[in-house]
Image (cartoon, rainbow, N blue to C red):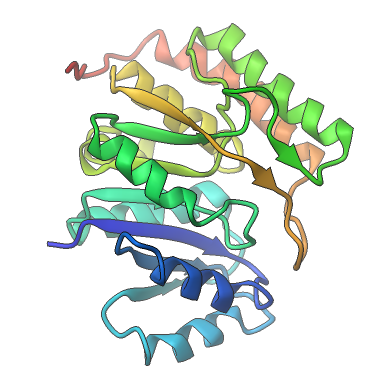
Length: 245
């Protein structure tokens, strides 16, 4: 049985992908990596395939036909992780905006009792580097808005640096997650919260990518903001299996 799987969705990440893979494999805690590549035209998947010759047991690749959305990439990875019986499943970006060293901290948080550990930019102030002020404010107030609408006490609901336990992903109906962009991150946390899983925020510093091109846009946040109201409304008519310590 393997313990830890880091899922990294990619689209045009040739500048970062080999560096991030080698960095993760050199951490003090052993991790496997699953790359979900959406038919990157820059050869990202080819770089991964070449590295698989070196990391035959620990590096995995799923290739998709095109850009199908961040949420569907992670759901594909979650189902793969469940099928392969990983116990701790991580979301992480390929571009070093998430410090791979923090994977160990998220892992230890879940080992110590959390069901979901969030690498949080906002649980202890605003820890974001190299973002323009308007983008910081948009992200920060999006999370504030989610807390207001849902009542969920998570300071960084749009965070994409997360560890889920196998139990959480098996409990959530992954096919019922509706939002596919960055709203997906909100909906996954909200659903885990509704199931009464223990959510822990671990303070991190988010540093915007140095290489490659950002996939972020205002439209992505708009989808998340309007989707939150629909998500809250739908939740009022659903029953959630609860998990308490």
